[in-house]
Image (cartoon, rainbow, N blue to C red; front, side, top):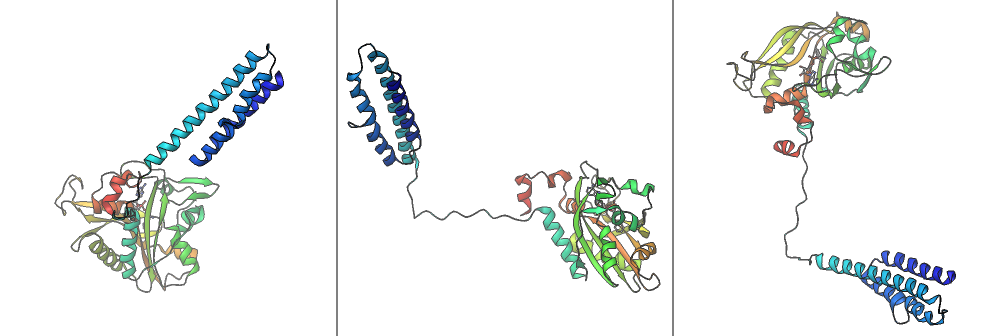
Length: 338
Ligand code: FA5
């Protein structure tokens, strides 16, 4: 009797697996005929019960009935599914207008980066890039930050190894470029920068654009002229700038550059905290100490440099109140700048 019961179980499993694998209504119908049709395997099985001994018949009969029931049920279920799929499929209406594919657009940061690089490009500066994982030498030492000097504290550094770090500014590319190129150098360096900062105006990953001009007879007037032209092109033609004394180890003298408040035009308001000015970037005349690291003659050339926060520039231009909007990936925000 055990052999008969095993045979029933085998046929049942085979049928259930085959039914589940059916990929079309036609295939399903073929399987129905193979198992449940008048000459089907389950039908044969039911017929053969007559030959089973009287005492075994109830048990074998019960198993066979149960197998038939399960197969029939699953067949019905799958048949229904195929029917539903068929009725859900929309009819092809060739008269409908075509669907427009969604068009992407640049992220506000990319757009701002491109715009700023273009403005400086028109002023004669070409684009150079550098690595985001940087050595202590290029990020600090060759920029005149002595080891253990407190000026390093201003740049909340994320180290990734011994003397290896995520660059805190784009200034290392000043050194990398001057090492490889003889003067004159007229470059801008766009790129990602990283610091252990996180509040509504500071992000751990942000973007800077470095400017470096080293040539014969470059003075602070050139720095002011280039930045005034930039502010006029990027914000509005009559945007005023001011230079405020500051300190960076790699520029001497150094200046923080502010623009007249984009909201009140310099009268004083909530955005500029009543001062009439908004801080935009750091700058200065290249400290002659740097020329020692790259083999330039300070008696021959002079230069200026600046480092502009791209996120800050975008926030000022578009009146953003929280830098995080730039990185949250919320399409309702991004789509406003398509
Ligand atoms: C510097 O990074 C200097 N390398 C700039 C420089 C270059 C000076 C060349 C002189 C010559 P500072 O730390 O101030 O300076 O940063 C420059 C700008 O980057 C800031 O004005 C600000 O706009 C932006 N910035 C700095 N930290 C963050 C941050 N965590 N999130 C967003 N923007 C930031």
